[in-house]
Amino acid sequence: GYYKSLVQLFGELYSSKPLNNPNIIKLFQLEDLINGEAKSIKKLQNNIKPKGDGKFLNHLQELAQRNVLLRGFNLKCPACDSTIWYEAESITEIMTCKGCRSKFQLPLETVFSYRLNTLLENRHNEGALAILLFLRLLSKLSKHSLLWQADSKLVSEDLPNGCSPDVIAMIDGVLVVAECKNSFIFSDIREQVVKEIQVASDLKANVFIFATLQESNLEENVDLAKVKRLIAEKNAEYPNMKCIVVGKNELIEGGITETEGRSGLVGIHQFVPRPSWYQNQDCSSTDDQFHGWPMWAM
Image (cartoon, rainbow, N blue to C red):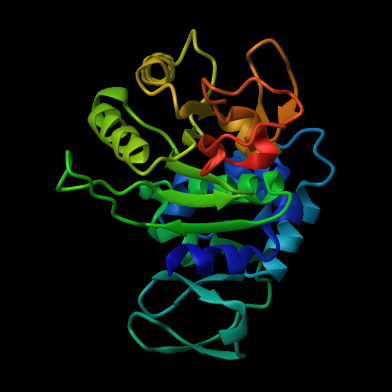
């Protein structure tokens, strides 16, 4: 599937250093690159302005090595005046214009330019970058096992038409359903999120996560503030399933921040609601109700 191919493109998500860099994430969101344009390193630096980021160029090199960034040339045909990008491996001394098909010689002074792999371009508007970073977050949180599926359709008795959450995952025995957005307008997604939370509850999911790359300054971001209020309401409505919001910084850092009385990145098990019957701190109970609840999370 698409997301398995995207993960393979980046290699080992857990150790992918470029994905830790906010400037690289900013680069992946440049509108010109998303629209298929190719830019020189100088132009990329002018767009991103990575001041004080000594690793930015090293990360670009790594992304080029993995073909996340494709290296090539913007060449102008002298016959039809079309400027077209050609991938580096297709370059020869005598080029054929992709437009008019005329032959022309490769210019003496030619500067490399870079464009995004089409895997990143094609589904950017569907939240592909946020989903990629969320899958990386899961791989970092996982201590023992991780299975995930993207682009699944879920149905329930109350919602026969179903819904399509971005990710369903089983991480160390915890069932997680997630919706991921690069950016969003609250009024456009409210109904979708409500449906997905309901279906996640019907599935007996332990955790529902809304993950987004939207900027997290609540004073400036009314939409993110609204979705956080909605998630808080759903926590009260579904006491057996924890609903949380994972923000931009957490996606880039690859962890979840505990906000209820503690700080710092924590494991996914911290968010699994404890059943009302749970009392013994030593887990000595043999109550049959323990069945179906992650034992290590107690």
